[in-house]
Image 1 (cartoon, rainbow, N blue to C red):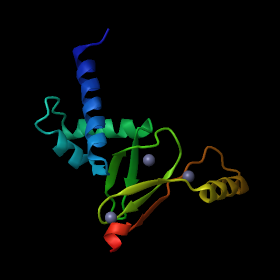
Image 2: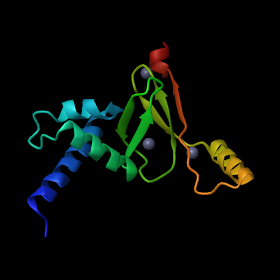
Image 3: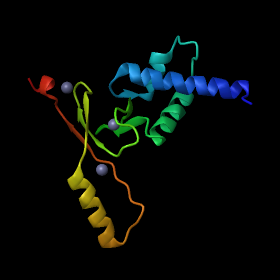
Image 4: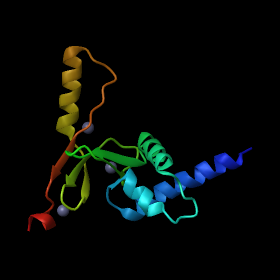
Length: 133
Ligand SMILES: [Zn+2]
Ligand SMILES: [Zn+2]
Ligand SMILES: [Zn+2]
């Protein structure tokens, strides 16, 4: 049995995911909140932030922290798989990329020092071809 609060929670989670999917690129929590304003589900900024974190934890959303410290989220085109991003710092376009050399290097380093359960975050920032022109 679902309570009304739970139903509203689920609807808001769906709205946050849809907003990300519609946007295509990376959005900050504030930008998602702005996109949802006027929406019937009208979630508060704190709720949006929590929903984004939960989507990220489930691998539905990609999270990147840009060099200026802003956290952005994007609907992931390769959910559930480990990958990295090549992000344009000018327009926000991003490519999903794999980094076999990085994976090998992190396991080798972890093994060398006897660490287990390691994870890593590697994002590459630059200017995409359109922004380079
Ligand atoms: Zn991704
Ligand atoms: Zn660009
Ligand atoms: Zn990796």
